[in-house]
Image 1 (cartoon, rainbow, N blue to C red):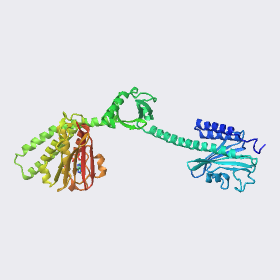
Image 2 (cartoon, rainbow, N blue to C red):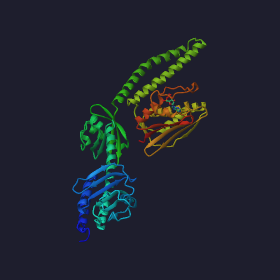
Image 3 (cartoon, rainbow, N blue to C red):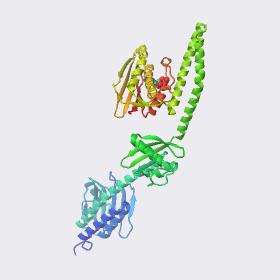
Image 4 (cartoon, rainbow, N blue to C red):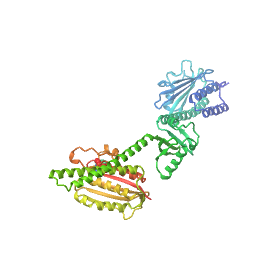
Length: 507
Ligand code: ADP
């Protein structure tokens, strides 16, 4: 009998082993379990006295070491951080990316010491686990008998190592993706706002806040079946049809959610719901308060104004006339304030007046004509770029005029003498765009977020900058524009100038 024939491995045995091992790799993603099993099969088939597998990271450091001996359960050591023995055969295999057969460790001169083999080992096979031009592991088979392993063993081990390399990379990829998925789920679970993901009308994901606030109990349920789901579906359809991303939805129990929708391809529709009930209540209370106070102020103000006018005809001293002038000015200011407050309360209450198809160009021309004297008085140059015709805007003409008046009069107020003002109207596919640009004092970036808030005025650093105003003009502009489905914004640089723009949907 030829040396090694007792344990010689036939083509059939090799083929069967490769098939079985390939099944092992395909049936489980638990890498540790599979590799242990594969090594055990190799030990049993080849009759090796030991099989070792070192998994290596990109730097060649051992991340796992599997060890199998006949009739013993596989042992595995994780994160050893160990380097392969520098003089060992495994390092040679790792560096040269090719397998090697050591027929007899005592006569083979290539490695002075078989440090990674142990004293009784006489025959060794070592093969790399190659993956995309690098080696992600080294497999070793040992025997205590010299000349035990043959080239056939080497071929078999090389083939199995190839399969193992691919499986290891797949498992690494899988663990990585799973880890990312788990952290994403953990993140969305931790978000305090309810989040729901919808696919084909059914809930496929919800977070803890959604479970707590919307009483969602399980996935797979049609959105319409949860409480408030029908309203939510109607809102979604509206958002899709109007190409918008968010709107307020009133829940059956009276809560108001600000719902934001995002289509995340290919996963589904992601909804986040922000409970804004208290904000709405607060805003309602504020509007009611403002309305009541304004009405109650309007009457006494008219009286003061009337009496002041009568005093005008009295025989007053020079100082008396100056004082009367101050009273008249202050009353005018208070009247403007009260009128603005009333306007705002009405617009916010949805009582902005009947809408019609308005011509924004004509309205703007009218306002600019009214302001000719004010432009001249400050030596301001007006550049207007108004098209001959633009599509109509659905709005109340008085309110629309208010928008133009507020933006143009602000530009005049906040631009020093001899400055320039540009008024532009443009049309896009879906909107009419109105813009007023000035070369005025500009607005510091820190003030931009609050500009459209009621009563907000940009703080001034020196008294000479003081300009009469109520801090309500821009909030009125915003309320009107939004009432008609448009947007309003500001771009401004301190000391350079400002542009206020707004859009209105085309009828
Ligand atoms: P008001 O002008 O009555 O104070 P607004 O609501 O119209 O109130 O404007 C709010 C604030 O925004 C103003 O007080 C001013 O500080 C700033 N502002 C508005 N328009 C301009 C502009 N064109 N240039 C510089 N600052 C502006």
